[in-house]
Structure formats: structure tokens, C-alpha cells
Image (cartoon, rainbow, N blue to C red; front, side):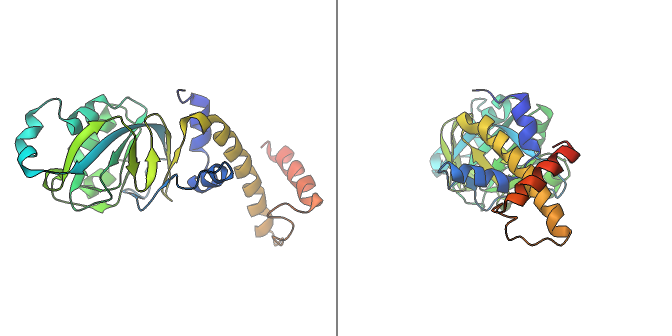
Length: 238
């Protein structure tokens, strides 16, 4: 099921932490992509459907620099085939010693209208990518070309990225805390619940800032909390 504009907008307004709780309630515990970080401190929230690229350990005789002359090379093909609005997610085996891509390929993704890029490896030209204002997440900077360790093998197949399972079409949400993967069939209901949770947490934050105890407030075990929350939502049109 394709990601609707309505659900995309809702996910842009919630956090990965809130979505993690909504997924946990449904029995999903390993959907967070571990140890990936935004390259830019002010990059936009990332939301889009996953389009995947899988790397494997390179075999030297099959991975010379001349492979890039092949227009069907999986890395180059992924950059040109990733749909506008989607997220290129790369399985780099959690190994940042060789780069998954560099600024030229990431710039091409941005110019094509791709929503963002995630790798559990590293990027070359990390400082340049950070200046693009384009949602990009990686493990750490990495100068050597991917050819030294990784061999791009196939695109748009199920992968593991930072210990999280990623299936093509799953919904990727990234913010300053990190990146989480939402199974595609749950996207609408998780977005709805996350919006409700966000409203309540905004109310709680306001109450705590005003000096209120968290006991009975968070979680809302006191009936008065629910009464106060309903009044707050009405007053704030939430």
C-alpha cells in the first residue's frame, strides 16, 4: 500500500521515539536502525518508502574500479532508479571502513527528488553532504571507496540495516534521534496513534513545566488527568 500524503504529513510531525512506542505495543521491538546519525544538525525530517541496496563482502577479482562503467551496476542503478519521494536504504553490513556513497551520488538523489538516504556504513565527503540540507544518515565518515570492502550486489530486496529488517516499501522515519522502520501495512494506524501520543505528551510537558507531579499524570492513572487533557485539547484545537 502506497504511503499517502496524509500519513506522510502525520509522520513528519511525530518523533522516532513516539513511533517506537507505538510499534512496541504491536510487538515490534527491533525496528530502530542502530548507530546511524544525521549528517546535518538542521536537516529536515525524513519520511518515505524504502528502496533498498544490498552490499556484500567484496571479492577482489569481481570488484575492480572498472565495474562502474557498467550502467547496470547496482549502486549506480539504485541512485538512478530510487523513486522520487522514496528513501534509499543501504545494507553496508554495519561496516563504515569503506564508503557506501559520496557527495556526487547523494546530490544526484537529492536532485531526482528522493526523500533521503540511510546507510549503516559511512559516506565519503560527509562534510559536503551535511551542507546539502538533505536528510542523510550514516554510521560515521569514511573516505575509501566502497569497492575496497563492499560489493553492491542487488537492489530493492529485503535487507538488514543497522540490525533492523527493511523490506521494500516499508516506511522510513528519521529525525535527530535516529531512524526507525515502520512495516508498510501499519503505517496509517501507527501515524494516527503517534499523533495522539504526541498531543498527550505535549500536554504532559506543559503540565510538568508548570510544576505538576508526574504521578497520576504520566501515565494518566488519575481521572482528573483525562479531564484536564480533554480541556487542553479543546483549548488548543488538538
